[in-house]
Length: 336
Ligand SMILES: Cc1ncc(COP(=O)(O)O)c(C=O)c1O
Figure (cartoon, rainbow, N blue to C red):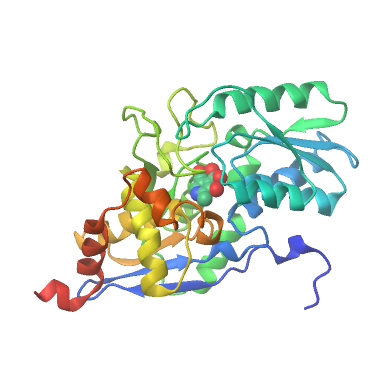
C-alpha cells in the first residue's frame, strides 16, 4: 500500500507481550507511540477534526484551537495539515519542551499562557480559558475542547478493532491512563460491549483528583486531572472497574526499567500503567491477556524521566521500584 498522507499512517500499531513467569497472565503492550505523531492521541485528534468538518462546526480554511500538553496538539497539527486548517496550540511551561518544538515544526502557532506557576503545577485552567476565548473571538475558529468532546473517545474505535484482530484468543483486562478520560472511556466501553467480563483499571498520577483523592502537584505529564481543574465530561466512570493511583517515582522508574531491560522507550504515563498492571498481575488480581497502551514514547522525555540529574534533583529516583519489578518479572527472584 502506498500512502499519500501522513495521517494514513495512524493506527495498525503492533502489539508486544511481556511474559510474567509463574503467573497465568501476559502483559500485552499496544505500541501506540508508532503513530506518526508519536502517541495514541493522533487517533482522537483526527477524529475530533473530522467530526467538526462533517457537522459544519469547522470549514476548510478554518482554525483549530486547543489547550494541549503536547500529544493532542501534535495530532491536531497533523490533522490541520491534512485538511488545510490553521492550528493554534495553547500550552504552558509544564509540557515537555520537545513536544512544543514538534508542534512548531509541524506548523502550529504556539501560544503560552501567562502567569506565575510552579514547575510541577499544571496551568490547565488558564489554558482552557485562553483556548475557549481564542476559539470564540477568531473568525472561523473552533475550540476543540478534548475533555468534553465525544469525538475524543470515539477516536479509539480503531484501537479496539485492531486489538480484537491481534488477540483472537481474547482480552481479559485493560489497564489505561486517565487524563481527559477519552482513551480509557473509548476503549473500555467498547471492550465491555463485546465482553462484559473484561476487567478495566484506570491509572491516574498520585495527586490527580479523578478518583476523589486529595490533589497535589505531580510531574507525570499529559495524564491525570490536577487540583482546581474539572474532570473531563468524556470520562465515563461506569466503564471503569477500579481507579488507582501511581506515584511519579513508580511511573518514571518503570519507564527507565523497561528501556534498560526490554529496549523499549516508553513515556512516564505508560511507565505508570505498566507498573500498576504488573502489580495487579503479581497479586493475582488480573489474569489472562492484560493490555496496556504505550501512550507515547520515552524519546519525548529525554530531558526529564531519562535524565539522572533531573530525576535526582526532584527526589524521584527510587531503586526499590526496579527491585520490585525484577521480583514480578523474573521466576528466579520469585522462587528466592
Ligand atoms: C502521554 C499521555 N498519557 C496519557 C494521556 C491521557 O489520555 P486521555 O486524555 O485519553 O485520558 C495523555 C493525554 O494527553 C498523554 O499524552
